[in-house]
Amino acid sequence: MSNARRNAYLEVLGLPAFVLRRRPDGGAPSDRSEAWTRLQARVAACTRCALSATRTQTVFGVGDTRAAWLIVGEAPGAEEDRQGEPFVGRAGQLLNSMLRAIGLRREQVYIANVLKCRPPANRDPLGSEVAECLPHLQGQIALLQPKIMLAVGRIAAQNLLRTDESLARLRHRVHAFGESRVPLVVTYHPAYLLRTPADKRKAWEDLKFAREVFARV
Ligand code: URA
Image (cartoon, rainbow, N blue to C red; front, side, top):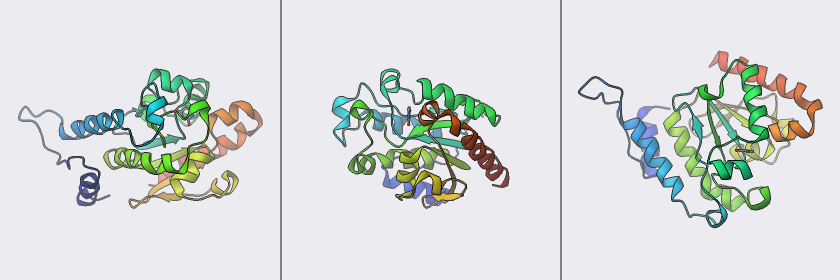
């Protein structure tokens, strides 16, 4: 994404466009981290949908804000809602192992969800909730500028790609996310893999595929 396009996008979201300004002391650029802080505060205060009434807290995202890899799940579960961090439950442990299998530590990637609030009883996100929440993720993507996105699970993949194609049909392909056409690869959700360990082998194929795609970008 060009700087002009990214800044135009941030402006639409009401976030300050930033220039990579150096501090007088020669320190790191600060505007970027201010933009992240503003976006996180905006998400924390969000009441765009009814999930704001039932959440314990918003679950913004975690990881390296300069990461090349963006991992996107569906929505926070009970443990994430309690701790305020995505993928911290059993599925999160498996996600960490999946990342390690392709040489990535959790701290080296950025992890977020399509929804920032937990749907009651972990039901699937409603279309209206996704529509209200997606601008938050788009803001994160505009700031992060990832080189590759990994959508974990059918719900995340279908909502990001605006399709109702099955997960089976979405795997093994390089999709392009949004206007910036970020390469996006789809794999199984770790919670599904906990229930269906026989499919871990297929997830491993997806991860190797994603690693190959990343090597080419
Ligand atoms: N499942 C998700 O999709 N996201 C989380 O953060 C946790 C479980």
